Image (cartoon, rainbow, N blue to C red; front, side, top):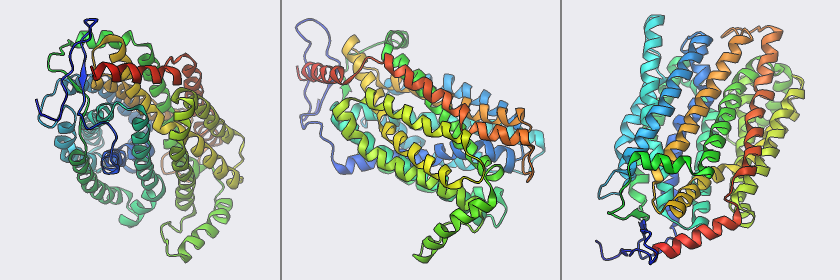
Length: 498
């Protein structure tokens, strides 16, 4: 054992102590927080592209029929969610290396993930059947590698520090980085795709994904180099996969967080993927032009020539920009509220408030562009307050499990949450393409039926509001409030310090 580590004896009660800490304490440097956050910035260059453009890519660029895209996204996504994530979680928890349990996964999957992300958004010149097969294979590989990279990355946040205040801070850094990735993908990417491909979106998205792959690989390597695992299970800790799974299903906060994660990502995928259809087919072009032109001209006058002259592309980008900027404002305030009132209460109240501004879109006529943008900004602010809390709460659930069972299985807990994330993303994207088919959406058509227009309007308002409202209600049954957070942290600190 290294001289800077403490070996923890068994408690007098006979319960085994399950973790050890470096003696240097658990306050994290800014360098480590920034380095850790770059990993999620890299991952979200892929993830936000899936949320925002997967359905649009398959229907309007790649050329699949909406019903085929829906089945592909659903089947592959559910196989990945329920097959890949538990396996990766079990393997990561049982990984032993000089670099720790989770950091090696980040390092060795960085290049394969980047290459596969590029290939998954490429359009080969195959027959229709060949393109379907290619899409299935590449989407499957992408989700496998994303799980192998992002699940250990997420679990790393549970072993960098046991200080819950530091976890809140780490989550804030992490999700500011996520917002930067989301900002790029949702604000600039459509215009960059059109520009890079000179009107050919298939060629444009391949060029953009090439650069995103290179940048993402570099950032993941930086994450590996700048982070350290401090909560280390004792060498004599042994548990079977069946014991780990049994602990999970007896862990009520874990079950609630799993369902909550599923519901949150159904909404994010559904509404995030719907906006491009909303701007292309519902929002009045003349009103949109009148609203965005002064903003675009002002930005150009100060040297920010970042938006296309096409009002739909510019409006879509500015709409997302407003929401994301105020999400970042919410993220920066999240730690302050969570430290004072507890993660659970802040999450539930803000999730409910953010949902009201999604639901409001059902009332807006096509010409009310200003109020659409205002609702997006207010939704972004309140949802931003919840963003860092989800993953910080999952790390708390790992502590809760150790507190109750005297065994720590960080990755299996995070893998279960990744099941919720992947299943939610899959169901949300699949429901989106399925509903488009139900409302008879015609890809690349400038004229959609009134029935289709109504379906698109429902997809950005009523339908995505339902899972968010269910998630807010579910948090009433989540036991880890502010008082219990303090108790768990105190008990585990005493246990780990012997």
